[in-house]
Amino acid sequence: MPTQNSSNLTAEYVGRFAPSPTGPLHFGSLIAAVASYVDAKANRGLWLLRMEDLDPPREPPGAAEKILLQLQQLQLEWDGEVLYQSQRLSAYEEVLESLSSRQLCFPCSCTRQQIKAMGSIYDGRCRKRNKPPQEAFAIRLKTDPVETEFDDLVQGLFQQNIGRDVGDFVVRRKDNFFAYQLAVAVDDAFQGINTIIRGFDLLDSTSRQIYLQSILGYPTPRYGHVPIIVNEQGEKLSKQRFAPPVDTKNASQLIHLALQFLGQSPPDGLRKACAAEQLQWAIEHWRIQAVPKLANIPQDSLR
Ligand SMILES: [Zn+2]
Image 1 (cartoon, protein in one colour):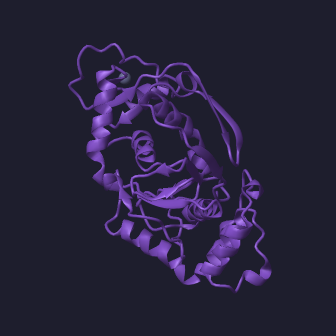
Image 2 (tube, protein in one colour; image 1 turned 135 degrees about the vertical axis):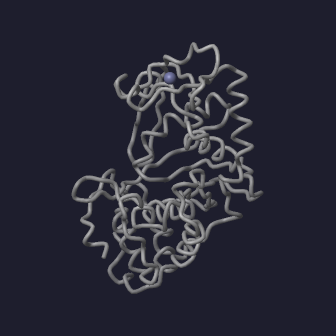
Image 3 (cartoon, protein in one colour; image 1 turned 90 degrees about the horizontal axis):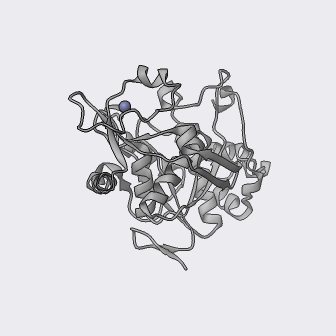
């Protein structure tokens, strides 16, 4: 049965790329974009685009537009309209109200230091509060010690006990912004996403999203977490660490490098082909089984 997604496009497979516009695309986010795009197209699926612009203080003006332009220059064409999370606040509010009316969440003003002192897993101490605190507070979801388990398309079986390993987690932050986990679960369901290919750094978030999906009665998509790039210090290549933006003048080289990184062994003869041709080759030859679980390439090779 094909799923009907919010853009009224229909396919058996609905995937997505969901960047946060905290800066232009860097090579690390390009890997996730290419992997999710090629996997969707190799499965004759849709590739939707969602801008995760929920954290205005961290979003430089124009970053979202820059990302869209970069994707176009890389020939990564998305299906349907771009969904902006900043325009979805009333949907998140509604879900939060329903969780609250089911008494599944609670206000918490605990500080970072207090949580660190709990061993970094929240111990549920504010669950029994009678009224919201005077000071700024976050809203946390009550979690039960249940095992969640999923078979990741790249990483294999992943298990986590949400109550024990994660604890009651934040669904609205102290600064009143909605938490990433809530917005993602709500929007993946809204957009009818059934396959999520994204960076390995989000593997650990997946159980929280699956937990929310089960509470909210949403279907659980398939997940595949592709390796991310770390520097020599083992740190994730990210905009916050000033990873250089990709220079889309070199679109075809970038796609070639991304495919190599994803274990697809593009032929050398393809190196000179334009980005669109390389992507077409990748769609025809895509093997998700060839994507390595972990990878590490020196940043020098990105220049
Ligand atoms: Zn608390």
